[in-house]
Length: 346
Image (cartoon, rainbow, N blue to C red; front, side, top):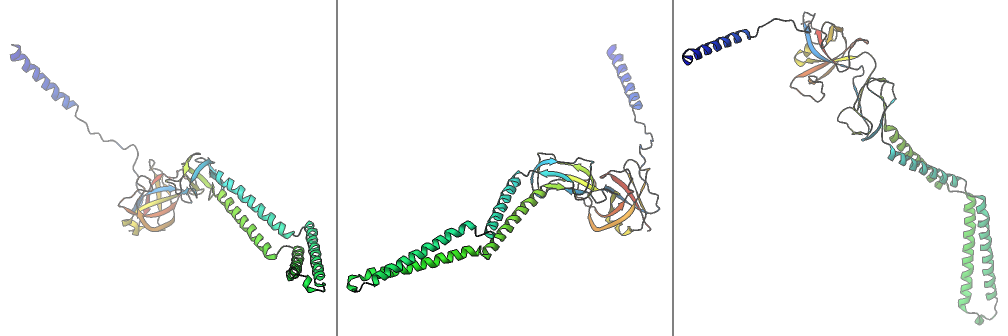
């Protein structure tokens, strides 16, 4: 009896429950306003574009002139800096040792030049004069020995070899006397002018080597090229900085009215006019519109890059970049995207 009437009844009840459940769980379409109003234009005819906020001087990517180990970072994000203020420094131990060597070389060259300019020393004259007197005495002795042997009346008593030897001894003594006289005269004359010029050139060369090392040391301290504000710091002490770096080690921008770099599609590029009105609104607050002041048009059409903000991005769309200036006190951040509308006459 149960199998004949009970099972079909249970099946009919399950079917009715399924139908009612599906009927009640059917989604209901409800019209609702978006949480944020989409951006809209107040111009009758307009050109739309996506803008990226940047510093007044454009974003400056700070790098290092040479690769090396970062020994110190002196700034942090958001800090105001002045032109020439140190931002970071690379390891300079090897150049510090080279600087000490170059300073020693300069001192050696200066001492060598000073010695030449002060020559001769008063103490050097008496020994040279003594050598001159010695040469004169040796010449007088040689001449006396020659006269004695020449005074012998019988030539057979004197060997020809002894006579020639005495004559050559006189000639050698005269040569030594002339050498001693020349040495004394040279000593009294002081250093040769050409030697002084060579010493001065060596000193100048040593000083140039020293200045080169000092310049290399100064280059290891990276300074701010302009007065502005640090936007981002991507390096820490102890990290290795390559040249060029894969990403900006420090990103900064000059203080002043921020700018908006607007990408206008190339098909609308002919419609852009410098005297056209323009305004922009930041993402998430379309109700507030910021008036924009035209700055310039960069005439080279480039691939669009600002879909994600990455500078290496490439797409098939090409855009004309138009630069506008915001008010100095506009509450925007560098790197923030804006929806920009430019008035068009046609």
